[in-house]
Image (cartoon, rainbow, N blue to C red; front, side, top):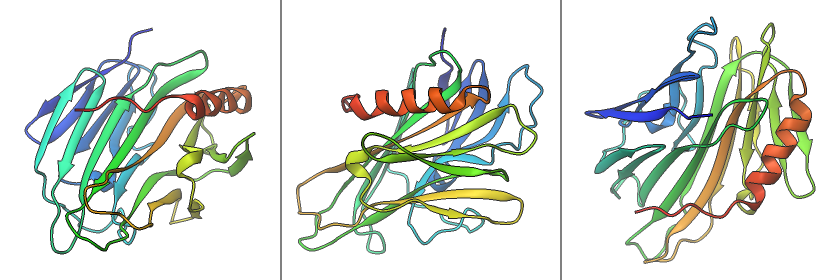
Length: 233
């Protein structure tokens, strides 16, 4: 089964091909993948709202928050954006969205790798990874190592899985209920970052067919848990 690929026009990246269309505004990484629609499946384009946004933990998806963009590129399944260190943001951040293979029962799967480094001698940066979609039951599933969340939007035949790699689960995921929706927000890092050192963390989001989503989600999480870090340039 083939995957969609990224097409980059200026600072807007779009997915090219089924089963899902989406956009990433690289000036607004906190919105992650948004404007999603299931091609040919008749699912409204505003469901879910966003997947795997990343940014300052204090931001709200409804607030203006536009970090400077140093460079970006799209190559096949990979979309990479780099944001320079500034006085207000004392670290350099790279966000790397990668479209993942789709095993049976999986509609779409994307991984976000976040990398931070700094020129300062004393800093402890934190960023947050966020997925937000329309309201429905949200459950935390305990795995053999770590845990993940499944959201089952009301009236839909699909579910969303929000996963943080267990090595990076140093902070709990907060579940908020903004009007008409569910928001999953996970802080990353927050520990001392030494000058010259690169910190990395990984998250994944997947859309699954609702029937049998428990077993499919657990299998995805275990595969994610054992997956090596992808190489980046």
